[in-house]
Length: 88
Image (cartoon, rainbow, N blue to C red; front, side):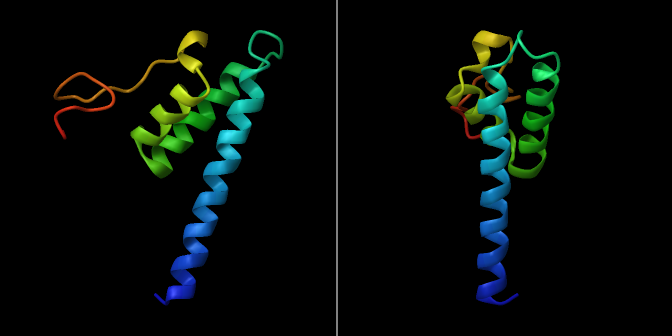
């Protein structure tokens, strides 16, 4: 893979993550106002976890204060915390 191809792939991933985070930010404002906001946020978080990892999904939960709306962090299997303190 060439440098240009790697750069394009990284930019596409960054754009995808930004789009998912934007969706979450907008829908979080509409929780309990718009009918499907909870579902849309959950779908976006699952996609972030699948494509970018649990830490990135946890970061979105923290950044948009979703824990106060009912979402929980995925914690480390070994130490039971997020962020992980054991490197597990």
